[in-house]
Amino acid sequence: MKSTFKVLWFVALVVTLVGCETASAPTTPENQVPAKTEKSIKLTNMNTIIVDVRTLEEWNEGHAPCSVNYPLDQVLSKADELKKYDKVVLVCRSGARAGNAKMQLEGLGVQNIENLGPWQNVKCD
Image (cartoon, rainbow, N blue to C red; front, side):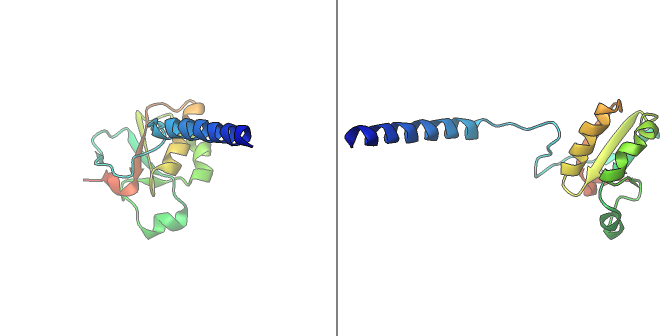
């Protein structure tokens, strides 16, 4: 009984230590946007396109007037068009869908893509 208790205690200790080590390693994947961002973009380059990848319903509730709406489920069909721009800026509600779109578009050869996160970060001045 004592040896079983010691083995279980040892296993619990190892699992706890491994779990703590994994949880304490800070990682920020490239397609993930921090919850609070001070970033914003202004259109200074006429060969830049700002693409909002939210649904049409979300777009209609509010969007940056200088952006276009290519919902996430349709944005890949626009890859050839997006390749014509010097810079492609992606936005959505939080940055998650824009990050997903960024990875997929890069896989199709679209270059110089930026995930700006929430669409409210776009300044159309």
